[in-house]
Amino acid sequence: MAANAASHALKGPLSQFFPSPSHIYCPVFGCRSTTRIIPAQPQEASMSISRRELFSLLPALATPAALVPEAGADVPVLPSAMYPFDKMPTRASNVAIIRDILKGKLVTGEYLEVHQTTLPPAAMPHPPHRHAHSEMWLIREGTVELTVEGKSTQMGPGSVGFVSSNDEHGIRNVGITSATYFVVAIGPSAVGG
Image (cartoon, rainbow, N blue to C red; front, side, top):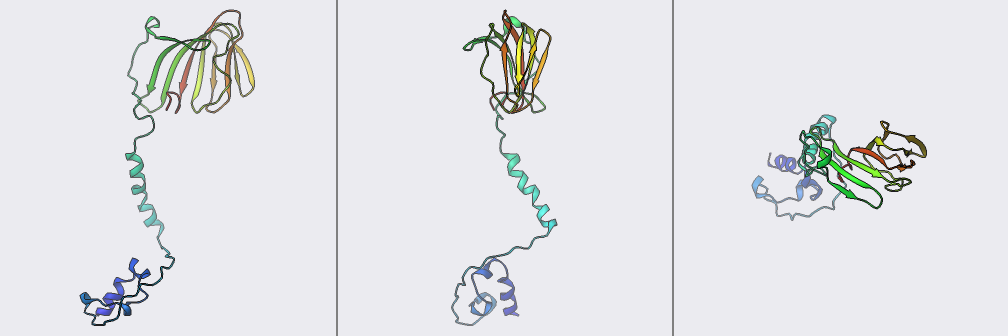
């Protein structure tokens, strides 16, 4: 009986270090042998696990991910608000005047950034580029040319352009007066996240 208990105890993780239960001196189980414990060479272990056991581990794997704050977790959630034109701060880029309107995260989790850009004739705010967020342009005044994946379209006041995530795009004022448009950016990099 004592040998069976010792044998049973070594069928788990310790069995890789001991070649057999006969090499064990164990006063707990009443073995009186003076045989030394000789570690065996580690063998490649195989694990048998059922699908049921595997799927029972899924909640444990998901829990650490839920505890890690997501990128951009410090981005404020946007409250309901009004943005009067005369209260919008302005900043100048290399060629454009930009009015930052809002930037943050929606209650539903999407990132949102809205600004207004005024471009002088023949100007581009930057070369064509790609990014993870989607963008929409709402043309207020002037005539712009929006190029998406190499296809150009001229748009005037009241027109709307949309570019999906990672599509190459650029905008240029092709009119003889300043062009003003709103940009609505939605997605993971919309607020620099």
